[in-house]
Length: 281
Ligand SMILES: Nc1ncnc2c1ncn2[C@@H]1O[C@H](COP(=O)(O)OP(=O)(O)OP(=O)(O)O)[C@@H](O)[C@H]1O
Ligand SMILES: O=P(O)(O)OC[C@H]1O[C@H](OP(=O)(O)OP(=O)(O)O)[C@H](O)[C@@H]1O
Ligand SMILES: [Mg+2]
Image (cartoon, rainbow, N blue to C red; front, side, top):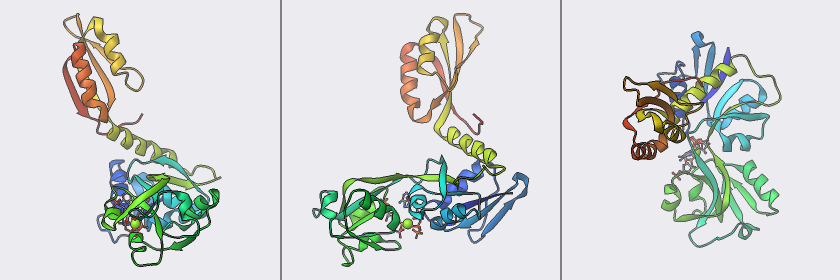
Protein backbone atom coordinates (compact mmCIF):
# COMPACT_ATOMS: atom_id res chain seq x y z
CA UNK A 1 0.00 0.00 0.00
CA UNK A 2 1.17 3.53 -0.84
CA UNK A 3 1.14 5.63 2.34
CA UNK A 4 0.23 9.29 1.84
CA UNK A 5 0.39 12.14 4.39
CA UNK A 6 -2.48 14.64 4.08
CA UNK A 7 -2.87 17.90 6.08
CA UNK A 8 -5.40 17.33 8.87
CA UNK A 9 -6.39 20.99 9.39
CA UNK A 10 -5.62 24.55 8.34
CA UNK A 11 -5.23 26.29 5.00
CA UNK A 12 -4.22 23.15 3.03
CA UNK A 13 -6.53 20.55 4.49
CA UNK A 14 -9.87 20.97 2.71
CA UNK A 15 -8.41 21.60 -0.74
CA UNK A 16 -6.05 18.61 -0.42
CA UNK A 17 -8.87 16.25 0.56
CA UNK A 18 -11.19 17.47 -2.18
CA UNK A 19 -8.46 17.06 -4.79
CA UNK A 20 -7.89 13.45 -3.65
CA UNK A 21 -11.64 12.80 -3.70
CA UNK A 22 -11.81 14.23 -7.24
CA UNK A 23 -8.99 11.85 -8.19
CA UNK A 24 -11.21 8.94 -7.16
CA UNK A 25 -9.86 8.18 -3.68
CA UNK A 26 -11.92 7.61 -0.56
CA UNK A 27 -11.72 10.52 1.86
CA UNK A 28 -12.64 10.75 5.54
CA UNK A 29 -16.12 11.83 6.63
CA UNK A 30 -15.13 12.89 10.13
CA UNK A 31 -12.26 15.36 10.67
CA UNK A 32 -11.19 13.39 13.76
CA UNK A 33 -10.27 10.30 11.71
CA UNK A 34 -6.49 9.94 11.75
CA UNK A 35 -6.02 7.18 9.17
CA UNK A 36 -8.12 6.12 6.21
CA UNK A 37 -7.51 2.97 4.20
CA UNK A 38 -8.68 2.77 0.58
CA UNK A 39 -8.10 -0.93 -0.19
CA UNK A 40 -9.58 -0.75 -3.67
CA UNK A 41 -6.90 1.77 -4.70
CA UNK A 42 -4.18 0.19 -2.52
CA UNK A 43 -3.53 3.45 -0.74
CA UNK A 44 -3.60 4.62 2.87
CA UNK A 45 -4.02 8.25 3.99
CA UNK A 46 -2.57 9.60 7.26
CA UNK A 47 -3.98 12.93 8.42
CA UNK A 48 -1.16 14.92 10.02
CA UNK A 49 -0.18 18.48 10.93
CA UNK A 50 0.93 20.26 7.74
CA UNK A 51 4.24 21.22 9.34
CA UNK A 52 5.06 17.59 10.24
CA UNK A 53 4.35 16.09 6.82
CA UNK A 54 7.80 16.77 5.32
CA UNK A 55 9.39 15.16 8.39
CA UNK A 56 7.48 11.88 7.89
CA UNK A 57 8.25 11.81 4.17
CA UNK A 58 11.89 12.83 4.62
CA UNK A 59 12.47 10.05 7.15
CA UNK A 60 10.85 7.47 4.85
CA UNK A 61 8.07 6.63 7.33
CA UNK A 62 5.49 7.66 4.73
CA UNK A 63 6.18 7.56 0.98
CA UNK A 64 4.26 10.62 -0.24
CA UNK A 65 2.87 13.81 1.27
CA UNK A 66 0.91 16.93 0.47
CA UNK A 67 2.27 20.11 2.03
CA UNK A 68 3.27 23.69 1.24
CA UNK A 69 6.57 24.45 -0.54
CA UNK A 70 7.43 26.85 2.30
CA UNK A 71 6.87 24.14 4.92
CA UNK A 72 8.94 21.65 2.91
CA UNK A 73 11.90 24.05 2.63
CA UNK A 74 11.66 25.08 6.26
CA UNK A 75 11.74 21.45 7.45
CA UNK A 76 15.21 20.91 5.85
CA UNK A 77 14.68 17.20 5.33
CA UNK A 78 15.50 14.75 2.52
CA UNK A 79 12.22 15.24 0.66
CA UNK A 80 11.51 16.96 -2.65
CA UNK A 81 8.67 18.31 -4.79
CA UNK A 82 7.19 15.94 -7.36
CA UNK A 83 4.06 17.86 -8.49
CA UNK A 84 2.64 21.38 -8.02
CA UNK A 85 -0.98 21.10 -6.96
CA UNK A 86 -2.25 24.58 -7.86
CA UNK A 87 -3.91 25.54 -4.56
CA UNK A 88 -2.88 27.37 -1.34
CA UNK A 89 -0.83 29.86 -3.33
CA UNK A 90 0.93 32.33 -1.04
CA UNK A 91 4.05 34.47 -0.87
CA UNK A 92 6.50 34.50 2.01
CA UNK A 93 7.46 38.13 2.62
CA UNK A 94 8.97 40.66 4.98
CA UNK A 95 6.62 43.15 6.56
CA UNK A 96 6.89 45.89 9.14
CA UNK A 97 4.86 48.73 10.66
CA UNK A 98 3.70 51.01 7.81
CA UNK A 99 6.56 53.38 6.90
CA UNK A 100 9.25 51.79 9.11
CA UNK A 101 11.16 49.76 6.50
CA UNK A 102 11.79 50.14 2.79
CA UNK A 103 14.59 47.67 2.05
CA UNK A 104 16.10 44.39 3.15
CA UNK A 105 19.34 46.05 4.29
CA UNK A 106 17.47 47.95 7.01
CA UNK A 107 16.94 44.62 8.79
CA UNK A 108 20.61 44.51 9.83
CA UNK A 109 20.76 44.10 13.61
CA UNK A 110 16.97 43.98 13.95
CA UNK A 111 14.64 41.31 15.42
CA UNK A 112 12.47 39.44 12.89
CA UNK A 113 9.59 37.23 14.04
CA UNK A 114 8.56 34.23 11.92
CA UNK A 115 7.15 30.69 11.98
CA UNK A 116 9.65 29.71 9.25
CA UNK A 117 12.94 30.00 11.12
CA UNK A 118 15.16 27.86 8.86
CA UNK A 119 13.79 29.34 5.65
CA UNK A 120 14.42 32.86 6.96
CA UNK A 121 17.89 32.08 8.33
CA UNK A 122 18.94 30.62 4.96
CA UNK A 123 17.68 33.72 3.16
CA UNK A 124 19.42 36.17 5.52
CA UNK A 125 22.67 34.19 5.47
CA UNK A 126 22.73 34.13 1.65
CA UNK A 127 22.39 37.95 1.67
CA UNK A 128 24.86 38.56 4.47
CA UNK A 129 22.33 40.19 6.79
CA UNK A 130 22.75 39.51 10.48
CA UNK A 131 19.51 39.81 12.39
CA UNK A 132 17.92 38.03 15.35
CA UNK A 133 15.25 35.55 14.29
CA UNK A 134 12.42 35.19 16.81
CA UNK A 135 10.57 31.90 16.27
CA UNK A 136 6.81 32.06 16.88
CA UNK A 137 4.13 29.47 16.21
CA UNK A 138 1.58 31.72 14.49
CA UNK A 139 -0.25 35.07 14.62
CA UNK A 140 3.17 36.55 13.82
CA UNK A 141 1.57 39.85 12.73
CA UNK A 142 0.97 40.75 16.39
CA UNK A 143 4.60 40.35 17.44
CA UNK A 144 5.79 43.87 16.57
CA UNK A 145 2.96 45.64 18.36
CA UNK A 146 3.59 43.40 21.36
CA UNK A 147 7.28 44.33 21.38
CA UNK A 148 9.05 41.02 20.73
CA UNK A 149 10.20 41.94 17.18
CA UNK A 150 10.87 44.92 14.87
CA UNK A 151 9.67 43.24 11.67
CA UNK A 152 8.19 39.93 10.52
CA UNK A 153 8.59 37.38 7.74
CA UNK A 154 5.27 35.63 7.10
CA UNK A 155 2.87 34.06 4.65
CA UNK A 156 0.81 36.64 2.73
CA UNK A 157 -2.14 35.70 0.57
CA UNK A 158 -4.63 38.55 0.30
CA UNK A 159 -2.76 40.90 2.68
CA UNK A 160 -5.85 41.28 4.89
CA UNK A 161 -4.10 40.10 8.05
CA UNK A 162 -1.18 42.49 7.49
CA UNK A 163 -3.45 45.47 6.86
CA UNK A 164 -5.45 44.71 9.98
CA UNK A 165 -2.18 44.82 11.95
CA UNK A 166 -1.16 48.17 10.39
CA UNK A 167 1.78 46.59 8.54
CA UNK A 168 3.05 46.61 4.98
CA UNK A 169 5.38 44.41 2.97
CA UNK A 170 8.86 45.53 1.91
CA UNK A 171 11.80 44.04 0.02
CA UNK A 172 11.61 41.32 -2.63
CA UNK A 173 9.34 38.32 -1.99
CA UNK A 174 11.33 35.62 -0.16
CA UNK A 175 9.47 32.66 -1.68
CA UNK A 176 6.43 31.92 -3.86
CA UNK A 177 4.67 28.92 -2.35
CA UNK A 178 1.77 26.61 -3.16
CA UNK A 179 0.64 23.12 -2.19
CA UNK A 180 2.96 20.44 -3.57
CA UNK A 181 3.16 16.66 -3.63
CA UNK A 182 6.41 15.56 -2.03
CA UNK A 183 8.43 12.30 -2.01
CA UNK A 184 11.61 11.19 -0.26
CA UNK A 185 14.81 12.25 -2.05
CA UNK A 186 17.30 9.77 -3.43
CA UNK A 187 15.15 6.65 -3.37
CA UNK A 188 13.41 4.65 -6.07
CA UNK A 189 9.82 5.76 -6.77
CA UNK A 190 7.48 3.75 -4.52
CA UNK A 191 4.97 1.37 -6.12
CA UNK A 192 1.73 3.15 -6.92
CA UNK A 193 3.25 6.65 -7.14
CA UNK A 194 2.88 6.84 -10.92
CA UNK A 195 -0.86 6.12 -10.72
CA UNK A 196 -1.36 8.74 -7.99
CA UNK A 197 0.57 11.32 -10.07
CA UNK A 198 -1.44 10.56 -13.23
CA UNK A 199 -4.70 10.86 -11.33
CA UNK A 200 -3.72 14.19 -9.76
CA UNK A 201 -2.47 15.50 -13.11
CA UNK A 202 -5.87 14.50 -14.51
CA UNK A 203 -7.59 16.63 -11.86
CA UNK A 204 -5.29 19.58 -12.60
CA UNK A 205 -6.01 19.40 -16.33
CA UNK A 206 -9.76 19.01 -15.77
CA UNK A 207 -9.63 22.14 -13.58
CA UNK A 208 -7.44 24.19 -15.92
CA UNK A 209 -9.04 23.34 -19.29
CA UNK A 210 -12.48 23.29 -20.91
CA UNK A 211 -13.67 21.53 -24.06
CA UNK A 212 -14.60 23.89 -26.91
CA UNK A 213 -16.71 22.88 -29.92
CA UNK A 214 -17.55 25.08 -32.91
CA UNK A 215 -18.44 25.03 -36.59
CA UNK A 216 -16.27 26.88 -39.10
CA UNK A 217 -16.12 27.25 -42.88
CA UNK A 218 -13.64 24.73 -44.34
CA UNK A 219 -11.39 27.45 -45.82
CA UNK A 220 -10.97 29.03 -42.36
CA UNK A 221 -10.09 25.88 -40.45
CA UNK A 222 -6.31 26.57 -40.40
CA UNK A 223 -6.82 30.05 -38.95
CA UNK A 224 -9.27 28.64 -36.37
CA UNK A 225 -6.90 25.82 -35.42
CA UNK A 226 -4.20 28.41 -34.75
CA UNK A 227 -6.50 29.94 -32.11
CA UNK A 228 -7.37 26.54 -30.61
CA UNK A 229 -4.34 24.27 -31.15
CA UNK A 230 -5.39 21.94 -28.31
CA UNK A 231 -2.86 19.77 -26.51
CA UNK A 232 -1.82 17.76 -29.56
CA UNK A 233 -4.06 18.82 -32.42
CA UNK A 234 -7.75 19.76 -32.66
CA UNK A 235 -10.28 17.18 -33.86
CA UNK A 236 -11.84 18.25 -37.19
CA UNK A 237 -14.99 16.39 -38.28
CA UNK A 238 -16.97 16.74 -41.53
CA UNK A 239 -20.47 18.26 -41.50
CA UNK A 240 -23.32 17.41 -43.92
CA UNK A 241 -22.75 20.75 -45.59
CA UNK A 242 -19.27 20.15 -47.05
CA UNK A 243 -18.40 23.89 -46.92
CA UNK A 244 -18.28 23.61 -43.10
CA UNK A 245 -16.45 21.45 -40.51
CA UNK A 246 -16.89 20.90 -36.76
CA UNK A 247 -13.84 21.50 -34.56
CA UNK A 248 -13.24 20.22 -31.01
CA UNK A 249 -10.30 21.32 -28.89
CA UNK A 250 -9.18 21.76 -25.28
CA UNK A 251 -8.75 25.39 -24.25
CA UNK A 252 -7.35 26.97 -21.08
CA UNK A 253 -10.31 27.82 -18.86
CA UNK A 254 -9.04 31.35 -18.14
CA UNK A 255 -8.81 32.13 -21.89
CA UNK A 256 -12.29 30.80 -22.79
CA UNK A 257 -14.08 34.07 -23.45
CA UNK A 258 -11.25 35.76 -25.31
CA UNK A 259 -10.91 32.76 -27.63
CA UNK A 260 -14.69 32.61 -28.21
CA UNK A 261 -14.62 36.30 -29.20
CA UNK A 262 -11.74 35.72 -31.61
CA UNK A 263 -13.37 32.61 -33.13
CA UNK A 264 -16.65 34.45 -33.63
CA UNK A 265 -14.83 37.35 -35.33
CA UNK A 266 -13.17 34.83 -37.63
CA UNK A 267 -16.56 33.38 -38.61
CA UNK A 268 -17.00 30.42 -36.28
CA UNK A 269 -20.57 29.73 -35.15
CA UNK A 270 -22.31 27.45 -32.64
CA UNK A 271 -19.37 27.84 -30.24
CA UNK A 272 -20.04 25.62 -27.22
CA UNK A 273 -17.96 25.23 -24.07
CA UNK A 274 -18.23 22.31 -21.67
CA UNK A 275 -16.37 21.24 -18.53
CA UNK A 276 -14.01 18.31 -18.45
CA UNK A 277 -15.12 15.99 -15.69
CA UNK A 278 -11.99 13.80 -15.60
CA UNK A 279 -9.12 12.93 -17.92
CA UNK A 280 -5.81 11.14 -18.41
CA UNK A 281 -3.42 13.08 -20.60
N1 LIG B 1 -4.05 32.54 3.98
C1 LIG B 1 -3.43 31.60 3.29
N2 LIG B 1 -3.65 31.46 2.00
C2 LIG B 1 -3.02 30.52 1.28
N3 LIG B 1 -2.13 29.65 1.78
C3 LIG B 1 -1.89 29.78 3.06
C4 LIG B 1 -2.51 30.72 3.87
N4 LIG B 1 -2.07 30.58 5.10
C5 LIG B 1 -1.21 29.57 5.04
N5 LIG B 1 -1.08 29.10 3.81
C6 LIG B 1 -0.23 28.01 3.35
O1 LIG B 1 -0.63 26.86 4.05
C7 LIG B 1 0.47 26.23 4.65
C8 LIG B 1 0.39 26.35 6.14
O2 LIG B 1 -0.86 25.92 6.51
P1 LIG B 1 -1.44 26.27 7.93
O3 LIG B 1 -1.40 27.73 8.14
O4 LIG B 1 -2.71 25.56 8.01
O5 LIG B 1 -0.38 25.55 8.82
P2 LIG B 1 0.20 26.01 10.15
O6 LIG B 1 0.43 27.49 10.15
O7 LIG B 1 1.35 25.11 10.42
O8 LIG B 1 -0.94 25.60 11.10
P3 LIG B 1 -1.88 26.54 11.93
O9 LIG B 1 -2.03 27.83 11.16
O10 LIG B 1 -3.17 25.76 11.98
O11 LIG B 1 -1.19 26.67 13.21
C9 LIG B 1 1.69 26.94 4.12
O12 LIG B 1 2.14 26.24 2.97
C10 LIG B 1 1.19 28.30 3.75
O13 LIG B 1 1.90 28.89 2.67
O1 LIG C 1 -2.80 37.55 3.56
P1 LIG C 1 -3.95 36.88 4.23
O2 LIG C 1 -5.01 36.45 3.26
O3 LIG C 1 -4.50 37.66 5.36
O4 LIG C 1 -3.42 35.47 4.81
C1 LIG C 1 -2.21 35.38 5.53
C2 LIG C 1 -2.44 34.86 6.91
O5 LIG C 1 -2.89 33.50 6.85
C3 LIG C 1 -2.01 32.68 7.63
O6 LIG C 1 -2.43 32.62 8.94
P2 LIG C 1 -3.15 31.36 9.63
O7 LIG C 1 -4.62 31.48 9.47
O8 LIG C 1 -2.52 30.11 9.14
O9 LIG C 1 -2.81 31.59 11.15
P3 LIG C 1 -1.38 31.47 11.85
O10 LIG C 1 -0.69 32.78 11.63
O11 LIG C 1 -1.73 31.26 13.27
O12 LIG C 1 -0.67 30.32 11.23
C4 LIG C 1 -0.71 33.43 7.56
O13 LIG C 1 0.16 33.06 8.63
C5 LIG C 1 -1.12 34.87 7.64
O14 LIG C 1 -1.31 35.27 8.96
MG1 LIG D 1 -0.85 29.12 9.63
